[in-house]
Image 1: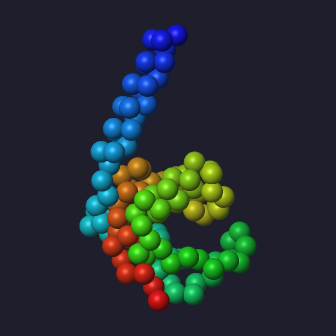
Image 2 (image 1 turned 135 degrees about the horizontal axis):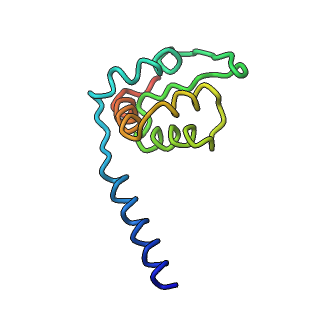
Length: 109
């Protein structure tokens, strides 16, 4: 039992180290954010799918918040069909890059 526990602990540490190695690069996100700008780059934009709602402006949000949100959409923990589709197409590096890009933007007024 102790060996199994030790293996689980080591696996968890290895996973944490791997995740920590990913650093967002805002410059690398230039082509990756093209799919985001159509909704998140228009002040006051309202989407109509799956229902009418105000699309949040994400510029200036903390990178970790954006990363967590995209990972939650990717896993299905956050429910929005369009965002799930987009997040599912992104690698962990893509997500970190997109988060870094939006984190360096100015918050909208």
